[in-house]
Image 1 (cartoon, rainbow, N blue to C red):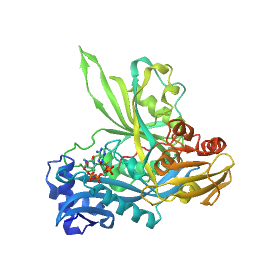
Image 2 (image 1 turned 135 degrees about the vertical axis):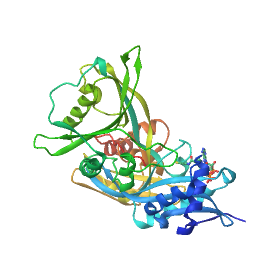
Image 3 (image 1 turned 120 degrees about the horizontal axis):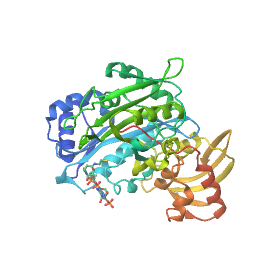
Image 4 (image 1 turned 45 degrees about the horizontal axis):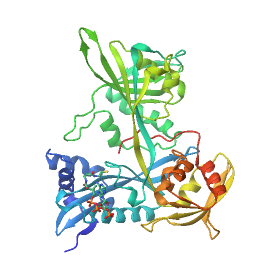
Length: 407
Ligand SMILES: CC(C)(COP(=O)(O)OP(=O)(O)OC[C@H]1O[C@@H](n2cnc3c(N)ncnc32)[C@H](O)[C@@H]1OP(=O)(O)O)[C@@H](O)C(=O)NCCC(=O)NCCS
């Protein structure tokens, strides 16, 4: 009997969670986890794969918005909870669930779907391209300091106070950073350790809010410490789980704070941008090493005209591209006419200078990787070098996209 793919009812939610637990190797009580997740799950966006009446595959998406170049926001769908039971793998369940979800997202007007991939090789075939990287920066605190003088003050706050203060600070800065997305209540509760996921220890640590000279909160650092002594010498690591400043000078104050905490030998900041300013803030650049750098957010464009027309461009130019999409969701020929005052992207019949797979366009669409790099690596067909030069120059953006939110 062929597997059935459909959205689930509330009374099926426990079985949905149970299937995901199996695929994710989670052994905690299912009922408890399901009760906690249900209020945060939009069942109209929770797809399951059924073998008979048994749920054997899961996937859900939810609406958020993403900041794109030019400090504009576009509606996107975030994909998560993708799981297929080991007994039912590689028979098309993921493909079936994802096809249904992506078509529904497109029909709802979401211009792209985004995800964080467990394994690199899964999602390219579905039109996703790695678009945003993340990095870990590790700094030898004993060897360096942050240059300059503080621009504000630091104050420890309780989790309860942070729950009130941090979302407002974040909401202000995410609107000015391409790649950032709107966060949801549950994300904050997890980040601050207000709730715990089964099988994973809840976050525990300290939260310090930065205030400007008028006392207005404009940044924060959330950290925990890996305590270590070697031969009675302190060798602890301060792990900056999140460091978020409204301006680069606030970021500098937050880094300064982290590096000056007593008994700390090393500061490790996770979930950062590879383009972080931190090495340039220091008196000794060599004290900061990027100790991890990987693909992070993958982008699957569902509406080429909506996405490319929704972002800004810092120069004028026009180009015609043929977009290929094996899933038949967003392919076609498009003319992009862009300028510093606005852009328009429309269907076109003109002859294309480039033929770009939808996932490759997704990788370049936020400016995180140059289209020329992708062309040099053989990811697109170039019919006209001038078109490549134009499209490459248009899609670049001075600010590297970055997303500081897990989903
Ligand atoms: C990833 C996962 C959901 C795939 O589900 P699935 O139902 O086996 O996938 P499908 O059968 O629909 O596969 C579709 C295609 O993707 C390929 N594929 C699927 N998972 C893959 C993987 N992990 N690595 C490489 N290719 C993969 C299949 O070979 C198939 O290729 P084809 O179209 O060329 O035939 C499943 O393996 C799983 O649950 N893994 C553990 C949890 C996980 O990693 N979830 C993803 C979180 S982001």
